Amino acid sequence: MKSFLSNIAILLLCFGFGLDQSCNASEVYKKWHTIELSFKGPSTSETDRDNPFLNYRLSVVFKNETESYLVRGFYAADGNAAETSANHGNIWKVRFTPDQVGKWNYQAMLHHGDSVALNTNIKEGELVAINGDKGEFLVVPSDKQSPDFRANGRLVAHQGFYKFQTSDKYWIKGGTNSPENLLGYKDFDGTYRMDTSNREGEASTDNKIHEFLAHEKDWTLGDPTWKDRKGKGLIGAVNYLSSKGMNAAYFLTMNILGDGKDVWPYTNPEEITRFDVSKLEQWNIVFNHMQKKGIMLHVVLQETENETMLDSGNTGAMRQLYLRELIARFGHHLALTWNLGEENGPASWSPIGQNDNQRKMMSKFLKETDPYNHPVLLHTHSHDPLRSQILDSILGFKYLDGLSLQQDKREFAPEVVSTWKRKAKAKGNDWLISMDEIGMWHTAALPDSLDSNHDSLRQYALWGTLMSGAAGVEWYFGAKHPHNDLNSEDWRQRNRLWEITNHAITFFEKYLPYWQMQPEHTLINAKDGYCLSNQGEIYAVYLPKIDNTTINLKKVSGKYKVSWYNPQNGGALQQGTVKELLGGAEVNIGIPNKYKTHQHDWVCLIQKLTN
Image (cartoon, rainbow, N blue to C red):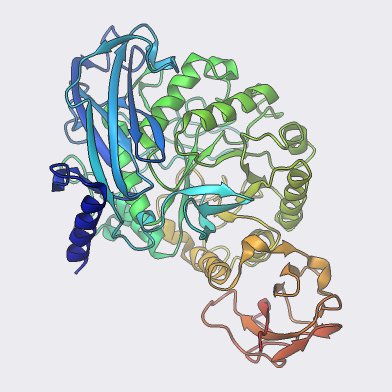
């Protein structure tokens, strides 16, 4: 049936655009599905004296009736390097994800010249002949369903939250911050640990890198692999995370000089102008699967120990080359966030860091170079005043969409979210703030075996931050216990944590127009409780314990329905001892009918009745 409807759509679009021969199957694509075009050009290699990454530039202009996208391409060796591990060949590629149905055309140009890849003028350099440099194609509606991002499109930052670009649908994040060296995986070409570490303040490492053997059982028939069934452990891990309702994963793309010392996009850690084509193609196989499974790519571009490694922190030639390659190869993905770097800025344990101007220029470069306007966030230090010394100077900067927040003492996390959202708004910029690394640094989100219900995380870092305006959460695993931020191999060690997180995400997505609501914790009399409100319309109240709670409805009128939600077990809304509230007074909200003293936290949903 879907195939039949798709064919009808193609015929209707062909008729509408007056297309003839161009409406053949090889030139029909779907909205939000990536188009990958290959061109035969000059034969070269990763190690050629005439550097293909620096001295060639593939530029492709994609146009329809209303839009034009300039998209960078990349050197692809033999065009099948994920399978062959080739480092030479004559294939150049571009990836483009169309956001509109209808007729599109493209014009590709390959230029050659000294450092021409760094030049923004697409006419600079010597034009090199390539095959198939122009063409047209038809885009029809997508046939995918959630959680596949191709069902809803590209995520952008909008007024402090994630939103799908061409719809009114918002998206809230819940996922994993660990292991940060997710890409330090044995089945990726050229991947190994440069050196072991046992420094104070970080997880210890040995020579072993990730295998994810515990998740090979989660790989299913039809899932991708490469090079004689490699990749099953990591692909299976993605399947598991998605099966728990999680939708984001945080990972570094370069940790040279950092904690793990096992992730880089280059042919080797000492050669920063040449990229490992086969490794990056294998990364992209995993990224494609993550998008299919509804997992956002949280791409962390550097960490505090290496943020001045490229161009001494400036956005000079080497940093530009690094960012352009990542954008060209991976920017087509629909759900992707660029993170300027872990713990960005100098600190006592890492005194040499990027300064205010350097982080601004990096952010500006990303926004102006990425054709898809992916969100750009800044990962923070864990406490003030160190954090505020860095953030105060970048408040209101138009090229930064928000914060990837780190907070050491979890009980203060909701207040920190509220504070920085308020400060950003005062500067005219609604920051998207995600609670991405909760402390303390040594323990953080423990395995279920050590913290069975994650009570303090649930109260402060999950519900507390979401009820204070956060756009989502990711869980950091800490440094000084088994299954930590660098050596964790099995996401099942925190199975219960994913379930609890999914309950919160489900409540927000199903019942709240959270993007229209404001934190108003003073409306309730509950100590350590949280209230999210669109006054006069809807209220959500998180209570760490039930204790004769009232809500101030003095400024509103009408009747309000009262329901209860169990944040530990999820499920359907439940009735309470009070079914309705009347505006115009401070009123008692009652208790849930299934309240038990040992089950101490609940969420009350208060919705205006429309007669």
